[in-house]
Every structure is written in structure tokens, then in C-alpha cells.
Length: 238
Image 1 (cartoon, one colour):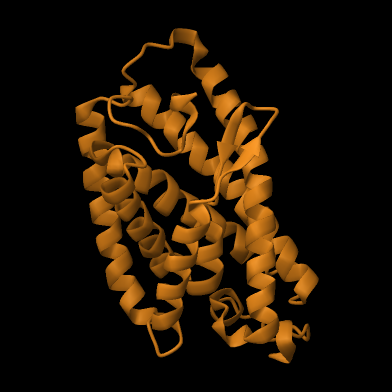
Image 2 (image 1 turned 90 degrees about the vertical axis):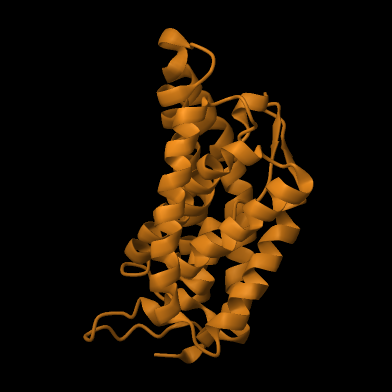
């Protein structure tokens, strides 16, 4: 069961592969810092702190996945992408992962680059691509925003879990042979169930914020509808 955890522990992936992904994560986070600085304003800066704190708090709460024999918690990539955008969102999730690894031992410190790549980078990127697609075809109403948040959160968790499969294929310390496909299927199935919980949390949170302060939802500001669109945004903002 330990090998199914999104927080990869020390010793599951070999050192060279872990080092490569650490360098990759560091380079990508540098790009996120540079691009995120362009987005920061009086609304986004405090919102980023609140998002990071919320993700950290909710990640401490695990919900059981009885059919898979594991438990799951919020990854936060889709939530961060919707509220503060992909660049700042990836940084928020990364900060949470660093604190969890260093303070709480949740995921190996040597595996931090792998965990950041999967949950902060791949998960957030996959979520934002889905958000960008869905918000162009769904109405910007509370219902449309809820569907967008739910679907993007659920599927981004599954995509992030497959990042671990790729990493294990490259440098897993136990030879699975032909069972790698089985690992991929097991990871996808378990994290699809976890993704449902993530989707519900994300949809509820985003819609709640949008009803009160739609201007604080990055996805509604950053992904504007086409000029010919007449569909109103959540909260009456067009």
C-alpha cells in the first residue's frame, strides 16, 4: 500500500531518477516564479496565501477509499489553478509539499522533486488545461463552474497518479516486470475514487468563493469568454 501513496517515500525510486526530477521541478518552479510575478496584484497575493493555507489544512484530513483499501486527501492542484492560476497555484502546492516533507515527514525529503512534479506541476497543469477547455463550452454559472471544478479536479488526480507510474518505470527499486500495466491500472482506479472526493471539495470551495467574490476566482478573470459570447459569469460579472 505504501507504493500507492501519492507522497512517495524514500527508497521507492532510485537516487539518479530522483535527482533528475528534482532538477526538473526546480527549473519549472523557477519559471512559475517568473510567470507568477506577472499575475500578482492586490487580489492575488493575499489569495495565494489563503489558498496555500487551506490546501495544507485540508490535506491533513484523510477520507477512506474502502473499495481500494487506501485513504486519500486533497491534492489541491485544481483548486489552486481555479483560484490563483496555474503558475501561482503550482507554487502554492509546492510550498505545502515542502512543509509536509520537512515538518511532518509526509513523503521522503529525497523524493521531494518527484512529489512536486506529480502533485504540484503535473496535477496543476492538467487541471488548468481542463479548466480552460471546460470554461469555453460551459456557461459561467454556479452549475457550470461546479462541473468545471469537479471534472478538472477528478481527472487531474488521475493524471498526477500516472506521473508516479512513469517515475517508477524509470527508476523503481523493485522490478515489476510485466506488472507495470497492473500498477498503472491500480493507481488510476484508486485515484479516480480519490478524485471524486477531491472534485467535491474543489467544486464546493470554488463555487462558494465565486458566489461571494467572483473577482477573486482567477479562472473567471484569466479565461475570458469570446467577444461574441453573451453568457454571464458567476456573480453577474460579464
